[in-house]
Amino acid sequence: MKKEKIYHIYAKEECIYNNLTETEFEKTWQSLKGMVGLMKTDYTEDDLSYEIVTHSYTTEENSY
Image 1 (tube, rainbow, N blue to C red):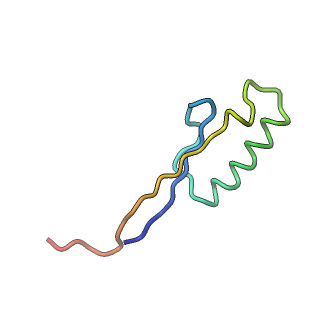
Image 2 (cartoon, rainbow, N blue to C red):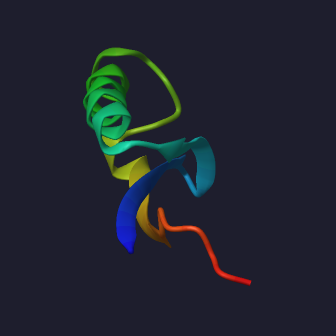
């Protein structure tokens, strides 16, 4: 059985990115943190959060 991590990113409790791979998450998370510090928005870095969901799956066929 294989496990895969999926990431969801939130801004003020609203999901703004979902089902990101670890690589996509790393790039997006760093970009978002940089943007909220540079741009004048209603968001601060404290408003950003994320959730990690571990998904388990098998690559074998089921026997019926």
